[in-house]
Image (cartoon, rainbow, N blue to C red; front, side):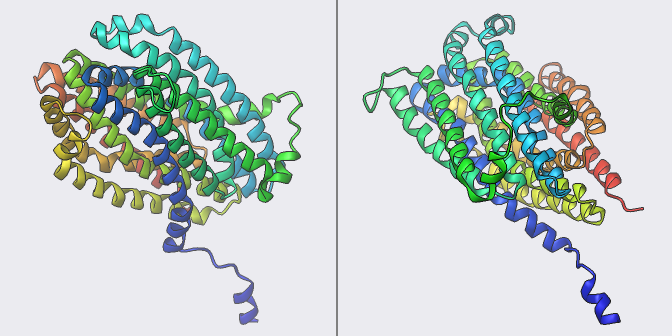
Length: 455
């Protein structure tokens, strides 16, 4: 009798096994995120090194103005992966297909609205006190880049649907192929190679648009013909009218998630505008440091996606005893990874900055900012995984309040106080951002501990 009971009782994965499961799912996600970031990295590298300080500052300004809307829409689309994972965990495959169908509609609507708003953003640039030449060069780049948001959001919806099925490698390969195409198109459209017109900075925006369209089409063709998804995708009634019930379920997670991310990105965009007051060299240095920090951020971001989806699956299957192991395992891996990033930025900041610019002033400022970035890398990784983990548990309201307090009550006022009132300049603005991230990380870890406590 004892032997029969032991054999019939399922063995739940321990801490190490859960961490391995999260890491297996996270590695292709991290690679895919790094590939997406490589598009922006290559753009900034080519523009800064070959076109000069003003075009680099122009691209920084354009990317800063589009970041809040773009990242908020990414938060909106995160609901696709979470709802699909919860549906699959509960054994409802048809519902997961409806999540994707309604997710595509949300992606199209959000992408087009954002692109139109960015086309109308010209007055905002001049009201923020930016240099005329920087604004003049930023606008054509922004207006081409804006339309690339539409295929990116469609790709995000399909990517998260695939990942909810534990199929993370195909989105990774499509992202890598898109980066390669973007690099070739950048060379062709910025400098006039391969028979293409030399467009300068606007060519970089057009290259990103074309590459992102190709990235989505590649993943869509694979998913439609792949054995694990083919039957499910072809069973979806694509022609039917959308149902508000599905939109409400997606928006219930997506809107608070968008607000959470928007608060953080607005804080960083606000910091970029504060940097612009100090002139083009400082703004260019800010873009260099932020590009490196954002690239390293892709590691915990990929971990956050994997942690969120695995928590969603366990939550949908009512496997409550696994939630803490999955959530805090993801936090631990993020902390280890970002510790390495902190050391690299602190030790090699000047060398890294020199890759982007030959201007000695820009390199010196960027090296200082990278040293500060090394400090907040750790808390940045913890807060993004903590936020995503709570999202996987459908806990979005309290984290939204935490984000508001951390980034707007603490972060932005402290950036202004340290940067201008206390005379610390650009470094003070970055220390204000670090304080905001630390506040968010501490509160989110506390919240996750409460939500995964077994009674």
